[in-house]
Length: 390
Image (tube, rainbow, N blue to C red; front, side, top):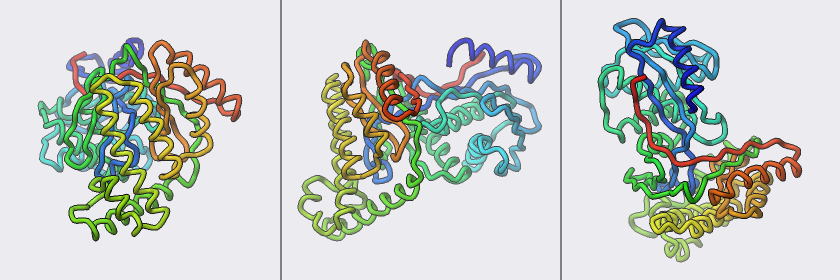
């Protein structure tokens, strides 16, 4: 968040709450997943990085009374008592902040009320995890106000629980985990089963990550996601009847799938093949980053898109076009769709000196082909959530 915006929000806090005595600021970044798509709910591997877009909560601890929060993005107030937290059916944004307070207290943390301003510059609806950014920033604010320092992994899990149980969105752990654990100039390799993670160097003096938003969302996304998740679970169950130790597709190797894949129908085999090969690609991508081999990383991103398009069948015409346009541009090392699919964004690894020109060229070519004005975002890898005095 730029200095001008931060200064404006501090002034807004002073106006709303009568001065800045005791003012603190909690911040948490959004994220983009570089590779490892539709592997998380199969117990596999993902590789996100935190991006230089974030949510900030400017807050002050109160001696008593309700929590009072102003959303700069929505232009609305929310107020609630810590000893009686219910969903706010009129203001959906408020439930992310209420839910975090609820699960922290449910886990035994004794919170104190706060007053503050919430503002984020993570693009909403672009698959860049604006919701987890809000949750983690809120959790950091509540804990700092109460003088608490929770274990980072527990904090991420509690934020996920807030989104699952209070907000009602069945997300995985990746978004909250990287928002808490990220490090500047690094991607994060996460084992979604064990939650073991490794920070991997990503030199943004050499490469940039460019996200291109198709600005389309096709209706079948939700039902198709559920169908694919069910097929993955069914595949693991059938293969587990033949090979000991298989609980999820994470446990299936390419050799096992080649030998026993005949027990699966064609569609289920294709879904399983994507997940098994995507885990292999993500492991290979980690090796590429350890070696600083961005060309190899880019090739794996390209293979990921082809697998998502052909085997998982979650791409669409607009995503394929955006990937095709990006790959024509000099300096683009890899391009693929990112997220659930059927619209949304692509993620691209681009040489630093070519990133701005590439984004402009793809935007113009996509607009010419579709008549749709896309958005593009250029990111570097930043560190995880924190709190500072203002």
